[in-house]
Image 1 (tube, rainbow, N blue to C red):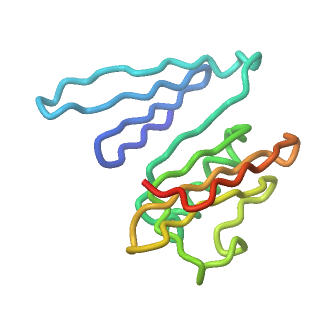
Image 2 (cartoon, helix red, strand yellow):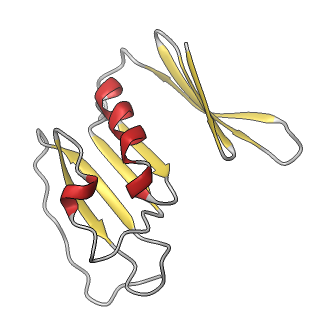
Amino acid sequence: MTVRFRQSSLVVVGQSHVFVAVIQLNAALVVLQYIALEDSRFPTVLLSNVCNLTNKSDDLSVVSEQYYPNIICVTETWLNSNIPDTAVKLGGYNIIRKDRSSGMDGGVAVYTSCSINYCKLSFENFEI
């Protein structure tokens, strides 16, 4: 069993399951999702708020090689136009990213397995 704790979330990976939990301010543990690893009828999606993708890409690479999710969604990438896709590439995945145009934080990226066909949609001047 692997237990990982980062910021306010906890991921426990067992031999046959994964569950994701959140630690609330009152220290109560709330289970958000229980996933049986052998259930492969649905695509697997990993969502992570990384707060700087460039220094978390090794961690993301290990998780992607161990569990090979079909889609990896990453928020708070903190990437900009000076950082090429090759700096945050994951083997076996295509990357689509939207960097924040101003400021150093923000940004999102989606990694899709090379086995998935996808179409990139563009929204001009879209920023939240």
